[in-house]
Length: 503
Image (cartoon, rainbow, N blue to C red):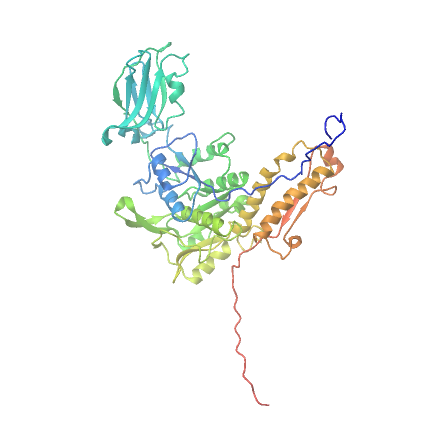
């Protein structure tokens, strides 16, 4: 009702409809983790192309097991569009020579470091210039001497007075992409030396292969409370190209479950069919439903070795195919089949036969195959709960990923419910909004069933939320769906019929 009805006339009142649209979340934002020669160590950066990776993380690297760059490149070659990258590097080794160190430069009372550890910063210099008409003002520029002193970043009208709004550390630190930790040694600061000085003293640190202990320790820490992963709002797929250590994979499976994400696992590089069929128990536990393993590795040209062909882990390519399939068909379509071609692959390390594929598929190992006409393709879509003997409801990759998509979308789309009066009007709004979301997916072909009743249900009423629940501040929403399962085996029955026989 209007606040006050004081005079005769017509009063207008806008009544809220109670409709709050639930939007489906993205399904293929991929978190890549690995060693790189540049980039921040304390956070993951979002990229949308391989060019972004080259600019922020230094591109490909010549070490035999430096698979991060190749995995990111394969992701974009195969249809990926959105990713985060987290760089792992050694910083706490007892031998200082093994640690990654940021390059630096000094200007009398002022010092500055590169924005991240590595020798990449040795290509740049920092130039300090005093303002001619004001002795307390100066500019800082990052230049590249090899490119005719091209100015890459410029910060003008800076001050060395801490009370000034343009105090240099406040303007530059945290804002520059190339330099950081700009600081004055004196208190109060004094004028720096105005000069051009190269950034020196940087070190990449010892290379960390994906299965090194020094690699897996920070990997676990990243997913701890308050870790790097906690600072990423949403990612759906996790890739650590080349990681095959069962203990580390098992830990990542748990982290994937906690974040409603899906882990793409690489098989051992040198594994043969008999080896990969015996999966380590550490990667087939309760949390294995949020992961899938792919075999064998991919053979592709290496641009750092004159395009010589070498083997690479398949996880980056598979994540790209997942993204491509999600965009064209939906997350409920298996990222496998004749459409799941491995772009950039010149072959596979093992060319498998149907019989060999038949040994691995029932065990939950997804095979990459070379097929006539279709080329190199993904030919399996089972999770690591996909062993036939387990009989898991999460046997198939698209079923599990669809469930994760629904969980994350409904989790984010029902935040408005918190602190609302817990009674029938609220329950009716919940049924309306969640039902509209599920109906939209049904119309896209996300579920089994010819009718909505056969495809899904949304229940929120006195049966799901009892008075005891209400007293505890709980509202229970039950959502069920009939998942689409891939046609894994196509059976053709051919029968010869006799012609007309005179009797």
